[in-house]
Length: 389
Image 1 (spheres, one colour):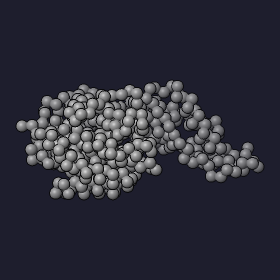
Image 2 (cartoon, one colour):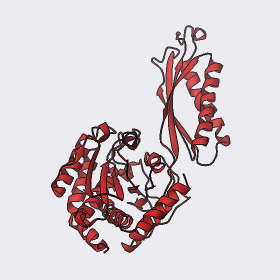
Image 3 (cartoon, one colour):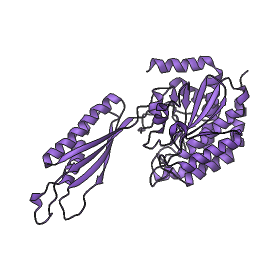
Image 4 (cartoon, helix red, strand yellow):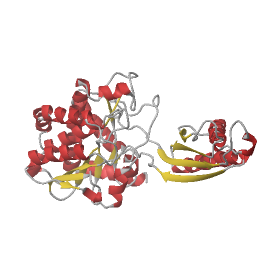
């Protein structure tokens, strides 16, 4: 006998004040990746109070990761929480709302735990903003046996299956020769000139980039003294593309630009490369079921929207191993603000942000229950995943 979806909604409503207070508390105390000690503690404590049982902390060897479980056996569905913030602009990606929605969905299902035809996990995944917490948890075996994973992300519009770009970072260090900038500039070799020329050369190559490619960088060391020809300079670039193959092609272009700039300036350059995140493979079967849940809650979402650009997320890495969804829901008007802006951080603590968080919690809970109760649906989800691997 199917469990009552309205009972899930009612549970989220009953928890709404606590969920909003928890989300706003995390928002008011932003913590960078791997430093989310307060947020993970508050989330774990909230779960323990409601469940009356322990939460697994330090999950997968990560101090700020956690997990709680309800139900038994298979299928096993994971609802994911994020809670790290950004430097200077805090929760301008709305991770406080992601955390609140995951807790709300999980606790709604937990109240029907004895009747669940399977099991549900909430997994706290730290360090999405550059640390790749999900990747490390995946490598640690935390997702072993999970049949599907889901979360929502705040945005300026509702989208069921938006793309995410694969990414990597390249740090470049230039080594020149110092000299007095006024008395003998001809005796020096400027590392800064090579650094700046790298930016110009990369800009000249953008005409050769495929759609969706993004290359953006900053100067991390521009010199030591204004009256000295710069001996050491450094920059860092993030590269993004729609596929790993294109990302590798862009990587070669960027490295070639840096080497060319260094050669032209008669300095040397060294590289420190760090693989970022993989592209997002949205499971449309599951995304559409999430959309149906939203529609039942009075909210209609586009399946996709090509008008808006994409970023990167470690949910992409997970989506290549497990059927996954990462839908977006609006916490502001379309075009009003986007992630990583001060205005968006304000929206993540607003009443509208809290309202969207609660709707997301209900839709996540409904979708999870659909997957547990409907073997045919879960089979279609897995079939799509295998067909697109």
